[in-house]
Length: 179
Image (cartoon, rainbow, N blue to C red; front, top):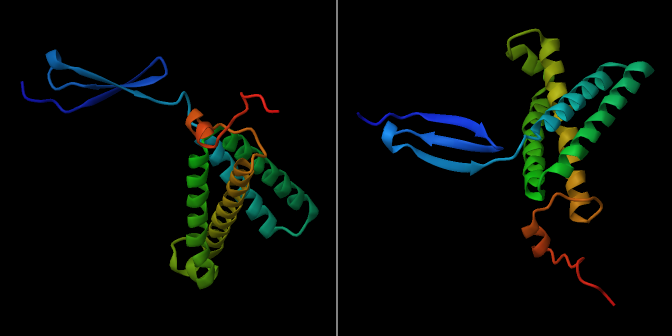
């Protein structure tokens, strides 16, 4: 038979097995180690919390919505803190940089004006302006929180999830007695 090109993904024992079947008799099994679960849901929750908090804080002048927005922002900071404890320093730095880049790209729309963007984009002007406001606040606050926790990690203010290689490179000598 000619070569069949398909990849079957199966989860077994917390590893991802890729079965490459060229012919049934010559099946090759490759093992790619993966993490047990993804922690990106924590970033998604914090992004949503920050976005709703930014929209509620920007559109309301009353005390109730402001307190609700503050509670949502605190929840967003908490989820970013949990995310920062679970990932490596490099991953946290990459995500912080990505959120700062996203914020700079979205904040460019404020230079043009939300009303102008709302007039050009399909849909009601107020909905487009509110959506851009939500994205702006969400990217700004997520970038700030990720950068803050990256700074805490760099200066040793938190227990980190460093790999053993990172600990060796930093000269972690906690196993040796000091006099």
